[in-house]
Amino acid sequence: MKRKLAGFLISAAMVISLLSGCGNEAADNTSAPDKSASESPAEDGGVEDEAQAGESAEPITLEFWTISLSPTFDDYFNARFEAYTADHPNVTIKWVDMPQDAINEKLSTASASGNSPDVVNLNTSQALSMVGLDALVDLNAEATEEQKSIYIQGQWEACKTGDSIWAFPWYGTPAVLAYNTELLEKAGIEAPPSTYEEALGMAEDFYNKTGSYLFMPNAYCNMLFLDGMEIISEDLTEVTWNNDENKALLNSYKELVDKGVLPKEGWGDWTTCLQLYETEKLAIISASAVSVNRVSDEAPDVAAKTEVAKPLVGKAGLSTNPLMNVVVPKASKHVTEAIDFANYITNDESQLLFCKEVAIFPSTIQASQDEFFKSDMETLLGRATAMAAESNLYSADFTIGLTNGSNYVSNINTAGNAVITNDEDMDETFAVYEQDCKDLLEEAAGN
Image (cartoon, rainbow, N blue to C red; front, side):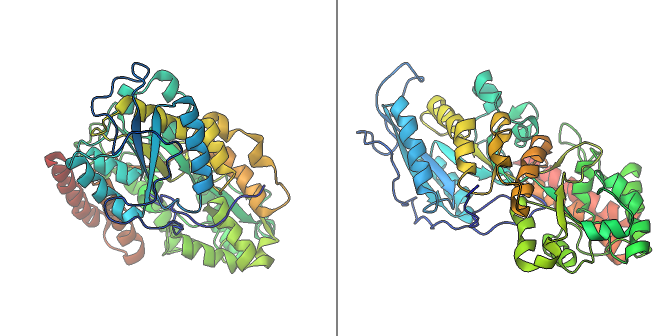
């Protein structure tokens, strides 16, 4: 399996750090090179009043924006565009690539000026922020059942608010579990835990036998997501995370932190986890397949003791998977055609071909089950890749369906961290951050 390990921008919505982008920055007014795969006479968005797909053969241009993917993946995208336009000879694809920190602002500006792109690559948080501006097409309402049916359910619902779904999921980085076989053997453990609840029950005995931590707890809000706990009301109007059940969960971790058998700091922080793992002070870590492979480069002696397994899951039975998505702006002049192309660039064939270029994982059911992901079982990266493809099928990009959801999540994490790290009173601290979350709900409702 030969895939480029050069980093490109991957959404890390909540718990996995961003891999640095490798693409070029587009100039102002989306002046990145036009990657059109066919030469049609359409210019600057094509015919304004295009009819529904299949009802007209008039030439149109679909403008497709991506995040930091050019020039590294020019060959892949140009081949995909060529295949698409061969079946849609009246369509030209205009490809514009730009950095992540510019795309939302440029999308808002372009839409307001009447020059909207037709298909746009956004991470989950970015997509939801555009939902707050009423800028995206509801794909649950506008896409066909056939188009919607190809995606893994948890990933299809990543950009869901109410009954609406605002994006086709594209690619992600599902987690795997890497564990130190020697440390587990020292503690008399034959196989790593499979759930956070199981790991919590094993942590004290493991520490007493090895002097190392068994696992690093996740960020507090992610713990609640993984266990399917209440965080916000279904209609997104009430703050619900400050409750006795959620407090009891945090207390169960705090008891072990106070005994010194779980880390006090660094929850959910990949750098801290990696440092502890590579010095054998931590027995298991959850990360992407490529991140796990860093152990081979940085601590080969520890890598020789490392094996991989399914990631820890909470009571909801899911693991984390930050996603990139593809959306269709409402301001597109060719909504039906844009949905068709967005579905094409995220379908089984397109995603599997992309996965063969770079260490990412598809959001579609069929592509995730391809034997390609099991083609290298001799190396740590190969085994991690095979395991990630398996965990991909029960993974999700945990998000709050709010335009300011990242701030809501941050408040919950800060509250948990204050209790664990600073020993602040839980009731008082939670009340403060609960009010902050209520303010965010009022802010979101006003948008």
